[in-house]
Image (cartoon, rainbow, N blue to C red; front, side, top):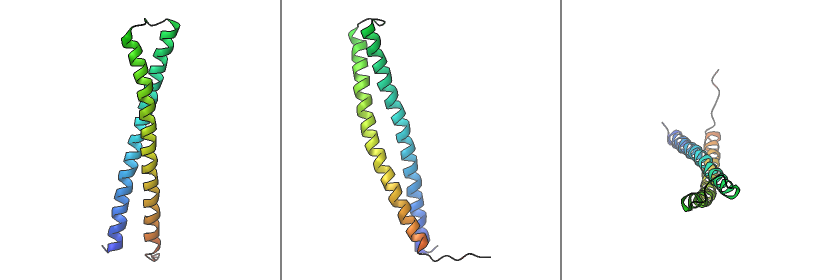
Length: 106
């Protein structure tokens, strides 16, 4: 392969890895939202009186809400960076391919 073809192949491999990281970030975001929801529900149930007011339940609820929000924010920032890197890689790949002056074969 020519160096341009090799570079395009490397960029495409990087794009595939970035896409996997973005998908992992989506899964982490779902987990973080579930943590926030579970913690919030536990807090509401404590306030309403459905759950006993034990320190363990209160600690879990507060930790789940705060941890979920922290995880969600950190994950969003990281995923946005991966999306930007993916967009940059796509632009670079497209520029390399358009510069190859490919011809259609009948």
